[in-house]
Length: 463
Ligand SMILES: [Fe+2]
Ligand SMILES: [Fe+2]
Image: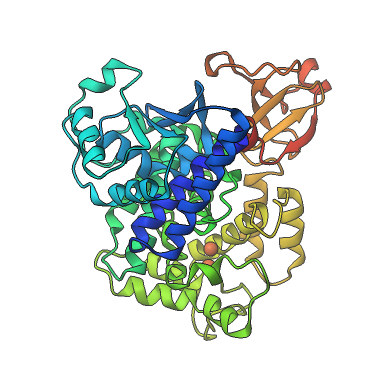
């Protein structure tokens, strides 16, 4: 049931972000609205409930008192919209109509400034004729008293602000790339500064606690995976830059370049980009053109850095000179781009896609090693030893049944450092009760412990 609730809400969030990318009435937007209505009808039938209510607390979607992880990551636009409406939740009634859902989605794109009160928002809904969707007050009075704030969450915040929440960082990264794709698709100017600003936050935050951001690496965002892919490639690149003690400006530069490296894909129709069956020769050529398209797109922008352009151009060029676009023999590759190429392939192999399951990191490393000449050999071996076979952010089950999140690669490759999150009897520990275990230490208790198995996609199903 939990998965169903997540899926229903994700449909709405995806519909809203597509509504921002396309025009009202675009077939893709209508299709999301229709599927959302259909799935909700099935929910009402199955649950015998009269309404589908979703609350918002501290920037997270809540259903039946439980935080919804997946929708919170992709639903930044809906959450911001609800905040602008000054409401603490939304209720979809059993008599929900497609017209109301479409009008609701149109409003998410049309409303530019926060309203003054919930009453104003309710009047607006009435005025638009939206009767089967209603708005609720806040659970928490405190949230009602804050001044309307249209700033994006990562703007003007000092480190130590609320962006210390890894969910919000991931969400902000996701949102900035979504906007960049929308702007690029419509030939609007890209907001490169926001990309830089949010990578700055990622950098500051991850210096302390990288694993928390990395845990989202396994979030299976089936039909917007170009966005998630860019965010994850960027997180991995920043992590490696930090581990290799690069200067802060270089880490920041690679983080931003990685967020935008696949921007050329914004010009490919989603029907082709997310096609599940095999591609025709023409479609394949279109996809292979994305580094060139991305480069042209970035060259037309104001505030791009040379590394942003080099990343868009060179991330599919191999160490042996093959790959695409064709690389003249006299050109020299910069180490950051060679590293980005490794991160790009590693992410693609280990992520879930509509056509494949996630591959575990160990298998991904052997596939990459077997592809002779594809990667810079020294960088690839540094990459493998820094990521480890249990990358930070992944969950593992220990031999005694406890479950923990990997917080760092251990000195011995299969003995990582962990934060225990779930006991052997299945009790999930609250954040303040979680504790660290280092399998690399030589005391008797940890020596008898070992990793039993890697839990791929654990976060998406268990929280
Ligand atoms: Fe690419
Ligand atoms: Fe990529």
